[in-house]
Image (cartoon, rainbow, N blue to C red):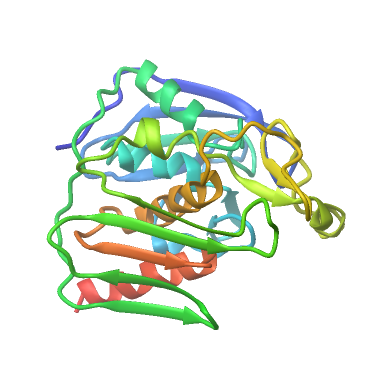
Length: 274
């Protein structure tokens, strides 16, 4: 089953890394066109397909490019679209980055549902037949054959507020709206200055990201005890959505990153095409 937008959905907000406000309009697309971005601020309104082949950078977000045209931090919006069954969407953006909003997918979900979408059941058109693993030190992502689709994510940070946490989510049983969408992005107080000097997180704040120091969270309350693990799972779904449809399987990640997510997606695509 797939869901279709009935109305144009328009959302504005600040980009996490650029710190610049952009407006996003999500429009219905023809069946089979897939999900794609349109830079309406540029001459000719260039299109960037939401596909694995479009990934150009994975530093603290997923960036898609086509030629010299790019769009950044696409993962939360794409996670929302695939989770509620929107296979085809034209996403018009008047800048270089998708807004962070409150740091989660909650506001995207509310806006899209207000646009007339009725979330449909999770669907897939392919099945994993053998395990696929991608490793980097003790971090890894894996896609394992399974009788049903499941996502499991583990994280481990040397900050007592986070520590080691896990979350597992079955899209056929559990609610994306209640269990995954509200989970916010997170960061560390002792890294902020360094990242900003690198030109990153210019739009980050205590209003759109959870932040902790070596002792505690600076902006409680949490929405979930394991909110960071749930947010990483949200990112994984968004990155794997660049496959178009996520195959049936168990997707397992530990201490992973956008880079590893995309490497897994590329490996899956290669395996499914052989």
